[in-house]
Length: 275
Picture 1 (cartoon, rainbow, N blue to C red):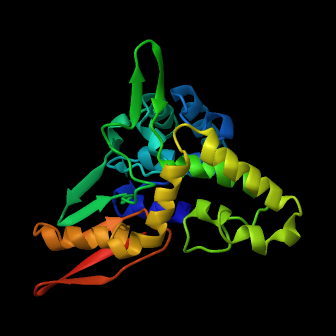
Picture 2 (picture 1 turned 90 degrees about the horizontal axis):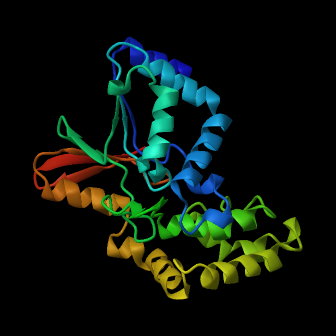
Picture 3 (picture 1 turned 90 degrees about the vertical axis):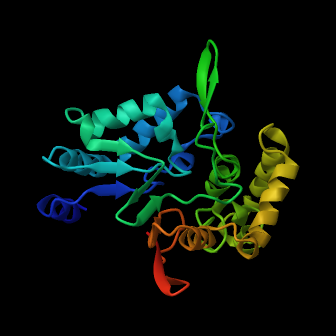
């Protein structure tokens, strides 16, 4: 990390973090899953930052250099950076003296390249205008995605009794292992696992007013049909390249794998990159 940061500084390159830099749902607890307040989000962010001080110091060093520019595009896992309180704490840690060297963006078009996070699946996408729920006289709430709720309410409690959860089938959304493979294939890890999994599955389906069985079933249906229907970052990037003449490259950061294919659009070859 430090070699990379020093290389950026030496060559006067900007640094862009295209989302999911901080894993909010992985560090969240179930009692605040449905609608974390601004104070909840600040505490979780400081918990993450405190556990990764070397990373935060590296960002601070980068932002302290003349001419540096750090650009951040929040993703579905760290959308809490949109919260004013969280952003203020982030800025205190990475750019206390040079706030002008940090930009928070939803997307960026530059040099015929389109940058964004790319969370467009139904269970991960978020409306940029409805991320924060304002309530007169009451604390702000973070309008988290259904995928966030399922990770916090279902996956985190179950994985506490079986660390293999979400590490067995990388092609599936993290929370889906809780409904499918892990109950049968990991009995030897903990004999209590099927009972714990069943309990938290029922609690998740019927205990949270923001989830509910029908909404969860719709997400499972997307998981089955998503690739075919084009509701994934790859097809989204392809649509952008086909419909926009002003860009020849799309760079996303949502998918959990590196992708770098060429896309033919008429007589031109364009590129989709996911990192």
